[in-house]
Amino acid sequence: MQVGIEKSVVTPLIKKKSRVKNRGLSIQVSNALLSILLIIWEVAGALGKLNPILLPRPSTIIREFVSLTASGELAMHLGVSTWRALLGFLLGGGLGLAAGIWVGFSYKTERLLDPSLQMLRTLPHLAIAPLFILWFGFGEASKILLIAKGCFFPLYVNTFLGIRSVDGKLFDVGRVLQFSHWQMITKLIVPASLPNIFLGIRLSISVAWLGLVVAEMMGSSTGIGFLINDARSFSLTSVVFVGIIVFAIVGKLSDSLVKLIERRMLRWQDSYKGEGSS
Image 1 (cartoon, one colour):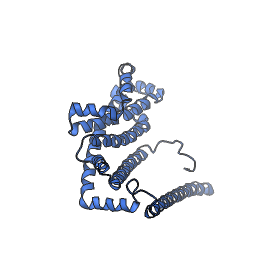
Image 2: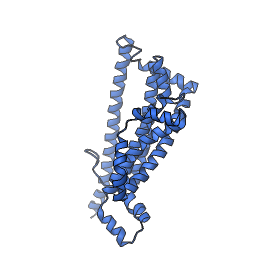
Image 3: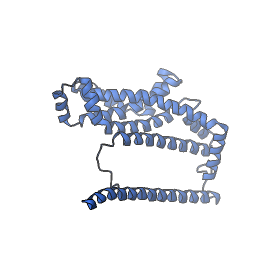
Image 4: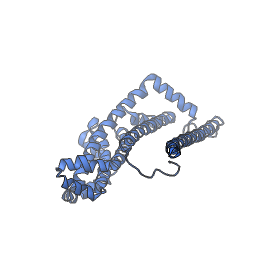
């Protein structure tokens, strides 16, 4: 009996140590590959094998990054872009979540609204950006609404699919317990749909940054998108790379934050996580 208890305690610890070790090894391999790539890039640039206008050396990009950071220009543009992306995400994502719950919960609403929404979902940002500028001008409204348009659909679609994939037995339980529509939504449907909703949030955040680039490139005097577009006009490729890297880092950090929240809120979920995860 004692041996069984000790085994039940020791085995999870061994598995946890194995996961940590494998994760650390994967990070080391990834960092090593990235370092090798950067060294090859730097050496090729130093030997004149690369056109500095088309592909500047990593050291040049780093110097440009340090210069923009020291002057405060990068922080100013990043702050403006982050604020726009956040407002657009909250507006579009909030409406998408509400619409997804509404349409997912009502078959009649689905028949009424979903075909039109699916048609609007296929419209690309670049195609409708000129219309937004004509309708709302070059101010902040057109940029935020363009971002919101992109953020709406990932959350709408994934929330709708999450609700429609809920086990029908939960609805029977809600009827037996005499839940109201609001209780049915908040206590049964939304919790069961959380994995899909979090996926929609992650996709909406990534679309927010993509929409931000389009919005800032088509009519703006501030923001990372403007910084990239302005640098492109003067062939300052190192500044373009700085803007791209900043977008990549901020996008990754925001996605990691959502994944952390998702992991903590969905601890109850027992799903397949891939080979080597156990």
